[in-house]
Picture 1 (cartoon, rainbow, N blue to C red):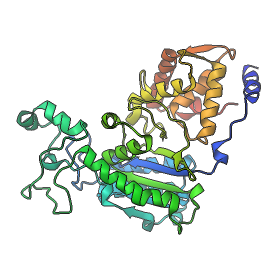
Picture 2 (picture 1 turned 90 degrees about the vertical axis):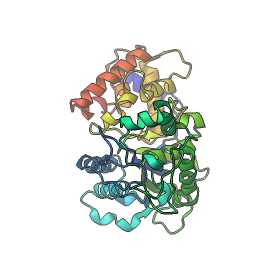
Picture 3 (picture 1 turned 180 degrees about the vertical axis):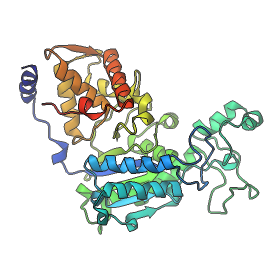
Picture 4 (picture 1 turned 30 degrees about the vertical axis):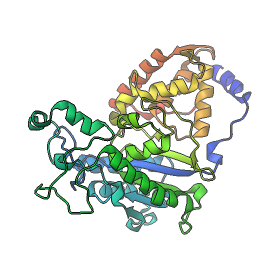
Amino acid sequence: MMRAALRARARQQPPTPLARDRRVSTLILLRHGQSVWNGSDARFTGWCDVPLTVRGRVEAVGAGQLLRSRGFPARRVDVAFTSELQRAHETCELALASMAGHEQETWHPERIRRDVRLNERHYGSLQGWLKSDPELVQGFGADLLLSWRRSMHAAPPPMTDAHPHYLPPPAPTTESLADAQRRVVACWDESISRALFDEPDLPTPAEDRVVVVVAHSNAIRALMAALDEVTEENVPSLHVPNSVPILYRFDPATRKPVSRKLETASGGSHARWLLSSANHASVQSALTSGGMLTRALFEAIDVERQGHLTAAELERGIRELLSEDGGTLDCVVVGVAKKIVREATTGECTITLKEFEERAEDAVQSLRSGDEAQDYDSGWD
């Protein structure tokens, strides 16, 4: 009865054009899987060409399977861009092969374009050092080390040709975040956006085109900052987890994102993350109490900032967001909202932001134990 009443009420709202009926260009960003220099003994990797771990390969395959299950099989991908570094290139190949599934003939490595401008930020003479090495702290001080990692314009000491990981020109000898961002944005302007919107000889017209970019945390951070117009001081706070697909959808005529901008700690983003039981741990902090995805979703619906929503308001808001995003706003937070609506006794039942965050945190715990999609990602009926 309650769900029927809510559906009737939703039908009374003015119809929203469905994004799946709107022709869009889709950009998928993916950070490479875990490398041998990630993890508990993390090193400053930069341009050092280290391979993936076994876990990193599994993450890459899992990302491809997730994309395939969400409507992005390999045959839909027109071009895939990646860096010159093997950890990104291998992730790209594994993800595309996984997106192809049993239809391996629908993709080919020739579809992959490598571009040195998508390489990770160069960490200068720090490359190869353990990030936690006490010698670094003693030699430079914790504050200076932090400024090299997190400020936009500070760069570590340059690498000399005596360094074991030195590369000859045109490789840089050190970079700030701003240096890396400039070359990544140049790659977007000159190559990636052209493939997404302008290139004439691709199999899919621009209004249905899908382009994948597999790169590194600072390269993807730079792209997201450009696409979301993130202020310089907020760029270092952009979160880029390993092997979690990030989607941007564009109107090919205006070349502007069509998805609603959700407010986040870095100032707001048009991005949509695809989450699953396999990758949720990478973004757990964004989903739990105070997490940016949980709060962003609630506040996107609570436009009057009342701090609470009725079940009917929650349902209408989720329907509108899903219609804008063609069903790709596919994260556990949305599943929590659906579950709250299903369990509400009347459409006027209310929930506060704090209660919503607590329910999302419970959902994260369920994901950790492997109790994933049925409860938190089922449909409305």
